[in-house]
Length: 315
Image 1 (spheres, rainbow, N blue to C red):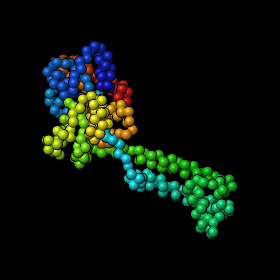
Image 2 (cartoon, rainbow, N blue to C red):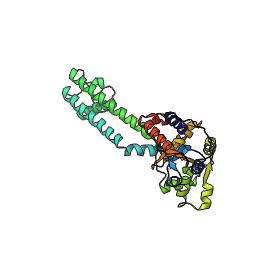
Image 3 (cartoon, rainbow, N blue to C red):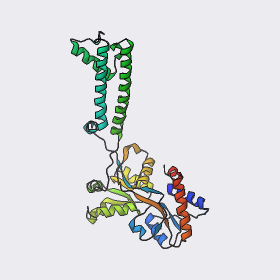
Image 4 (cartoon, rainbow, N blue to C red):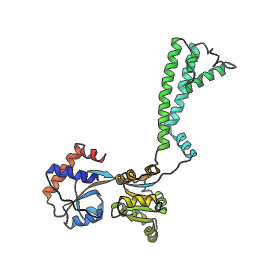
């Protein structure tokens, strides 16, 4: 993945050739690096206190958190309507739309000495004014509200403002309807709810370690063993979620995004909850690697980050 691509960039920069040895899990990589069996462990390796007690890391090349991938939740109309009503931008755009239309109608009323078009004139002056205001609000038939240049100018400006406000209104509405709710899985109630449906976790990674540690205060051991399923490989994680055997899968945010992209029916799933406590990620240095080489690797990583080349790979 991207970590391997970044390592090749680092190796090229310092003029090193490398021989790649596959290792089953990140935790296995920690053990082999601590034993001096490898020089550098390359993966999306989180710098945790437990790992730093055993091995040394390079300078971090990125940061990442944990996330859950779950089946997309269908929101009811009442949920969507409530989100719209409670959104500040929607409320402000609605008020500004009505208010600017009211100001425009008042100016046209003065300039045109009341409206005289048959499609606007109502039973009385108030009714006529109200019809003119509604026409400016919805932008329908506004050419009937005045033919003199001053009146036409007011109509044009009012319609332009209405168009801008409606564009903001529609864009915000679309964002609210399509938005995935992001809730931190560090919240115990959120995590407890997710655990009840079963969570597949990237086995042998910090995801499994973190999840089991958090679950200790929420569930008995026997329930943890049943509800937390360590999985291996992309396809096993995807199959567990698509089959409905588990309610969600957990991994680093970047890995969850990658797994999501591999799913044939990805639109049916969403990254629903995220751990906002991000952790630095770097490569693990083998215990026998000399200090001079370790420094060269750190300098290369810093240079690549400074030049924006690592961001291009991660994008």
